[in-house]
Image (tube, each protein chain N blue to C red):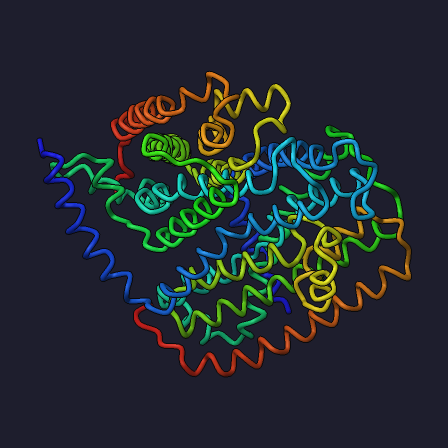
Length: 265
Length: 263
């Protein structure tokens, strides 16, 4: 068994090599980072346009939605930066190259995900932090040390929710020939995480709360900061949701890894 | 011509392999359409119209937009970038065919595939399962032509990015930047009427609106009449010709810097 410190050191070594390799396409790297920054702000543009015609959306003001969106951008960044390799799992599984991950004395999920470190995701993270700070200044939110600690905890949990949903969708590759549509759907649904859950009717709200808990990526946890007096008890579970879901995801991943038999090539 | 049709047939057949994917895409579309329904319902609340559009018109626009979105993605830029890195481009260049048309006809096969397997089923479900009433007007008859022109325009942008890949080798950044510009400025997510007026005026002068706004309006507000739709089609045609010519000129430049290793 390796200690956490060994893993961190290893991760650092692997990523240094990876970043060197990425720098081969320098122009593309620079354009990617700028593109990522703006594409993550595009939804805010859509909000801004919609609010030209209406004063509020289901009781939420423009600036409150900006706050939720900033929270969302930060929460989805760890997925983007650390777990981006999940997108390639179908190639590895189909072509049999996935076998190589069995041959190292390392945690397989760690080893597999460490092969990619999405640097441009850092610009999305930066954009998210800026948006969150801007919105909380505009909303005149009251930040104490305890509340900042709560914010970090809920962000950690929310990012685990996002990671779990995507990795679970990617794990479909172990059982179906082409997992891309499953991942694509999970990715598309993600776009709705920053919207207020109270726009949905019963069945959808239930689904996004308990089955595909998109609501815990941004909307529920940010209520702790936007309307601390009127949150439902559900919201206080948000730190647990992330950890529980990640445990489930890890279990499914292990199942998938154990059932994979290679392609024979 | 015969060889181009063979390309088209070939890529159509390749597309057929991924049947599971189609079911999932249709399912995904239905979920997406339901979610946008809730979203726009809460935007409209009890308002009769917003920016001159009724809820029904806006919803047809947005829902059809999500079905058309999959159709108009040609992936030509990703394919070209892949072919450049793997050195495959060399094998296309030595064939006695035009490179631009080669890319166009290959992508057309996928277009027909997703049209028959994703877009048409989604529209049918929209009408019969969701019971959305599409107004019957002249716009509906013009929609197929407009959609083809929109596809050609979308192809030009993707092909242009693919050619830029001759310089940068990897097109990831260019592709997402292009995608976000087109998605926001073309009215793919939200009808142009909702934009602030000054911005609307600028957008109508740009080619992007001809990709989504034009065909979607022809269905959502199909009763607007000839005098509105014919100029719109004319503008689309103008951009198709202009961008086809421009990308051809650009190809002559880009081919000079192309370096191929391996293959």
